[in-house]
Amino acid sequence: MADKNITVEIVTPERVVFSEPVDFVVVPGVEGYLGILPMHAPIVSGINNGIIKVITGGAQTKISTSGGFLEVNNDKVVILAETAERDDEIDVIRAKAARERAEQRLANRTADIDVARAELALRRALIRLKAVGQD
Ligand code: ATP
Image (cartoon, rainbow, N blue to C red; front, side, top):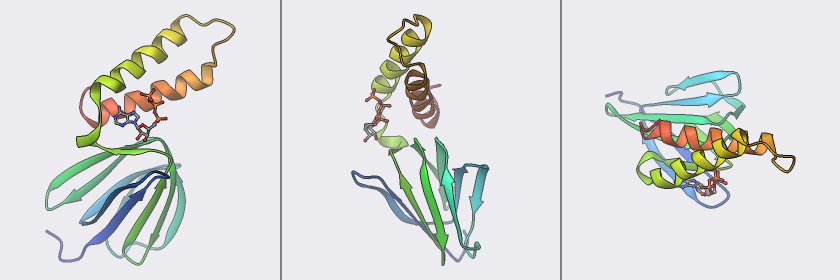
């Protein structure tokens, strides 16, 4: 295990989802996945929807997010996310139902279907299912 940690704080408008010292974090930045170790240079970046991975002592936690912003400064990573859920709090049945609903909407497109909205809902559901290995 590294002798120096980096603190990761993931916050949504509703709550603090994660706040712990970790060895390493991988974040879905807008220009691709960013791996952040202690002593990383300061950055501010947008993040995409995707999976945040935090690694501590060899153990990995996956956190699904629908996107937001990231700031790295002084061995602290702050992620302000629209939504975020740790893998152990993802409701698989709910995510599968959301995936099904979005797929149905996209398969039976009528004039009142907002395609972009259905595609985003499908993507959120797929990311949640991927975070728990149920995709
Ligand atoms: P749904 O249609 O099931 O509400 P959604 O993608 O529209 O899904 P969001 O608007 O992204 O939901 O999220 C609303 C809130 O519900 C957020 O706090 C998010 O963290 C939480 N959430 C959504 N889906 C799940 C899930 N499958 N398990 C746990 N929390 C979830």
